[in-house]
Length: 125
Image (tube, rainbow, N blue to C red; front, top):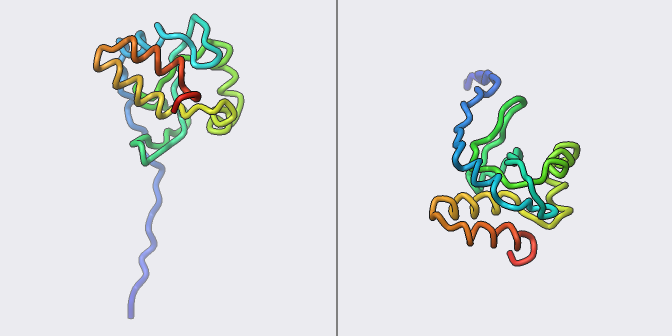
């Protein structure tokens, strides 16, 4: 006879956020994705996309700083007032692809590419 053993579910542990202040300064130096004005804030994208290596973050937990995009302050606040995934879909922008592209441009030292990524997000991709 097979014995069934219940699996205990525990709350996932918070992971410490990896902070990269020089990268956040770089993000803040770019124009806003929506609508393209300055000054901007480094807006963390919170929803998960495991196929891109982006895990779910819990309440009170921010994702790794690589998952940020430049947004004007009022736009950033508006983003947080809505379902984030739907908010981005309405704008035709995949913020996680933008995050990955900007992180690559930063590490390549390619500011021209970063500004092109921001300027064309949702139009060329």
